[in-house]
Length: 173
Image (cartoon, rainbow, N blue to C red; front, top):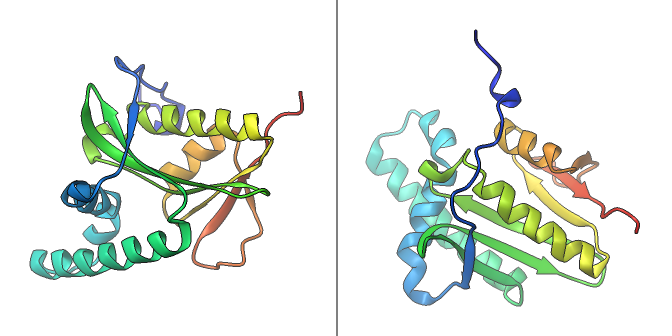
């Protein structure tokens, strides 16, 4: 019997993710995690491998500079499992909201509950601060959207037409 992927249970993690601040020496890993986060999109490009690598290098550099300028005072951390980096998460808080700037996991750790654990931890922090949590997702990233919806995020009107803005509001105690 075939069951739709969205109805499959989330695997149980054998280890809880831990975190450490990103350091300059982590740049090669961050570039790899970035490439993994864009792999489905790049598969549709029709470009040669060298073109994809050049494009990803430039886009990673642009994103890194933009995020550092806009969210440099945020929490940019590596996600670790058993001490090994498996992804990164970047959170930015203001007095009005917690923004999930970015989350990227290596492909082999996607769909295993790591992202769920990371986002739930971020939600606990938002709840403690009594802040809504906001994120933006590409419209074609249906897997991520399902994850966010399962974690209580709802699509909201977005001023940025190429992304879907999603909001989670902490329950009132």
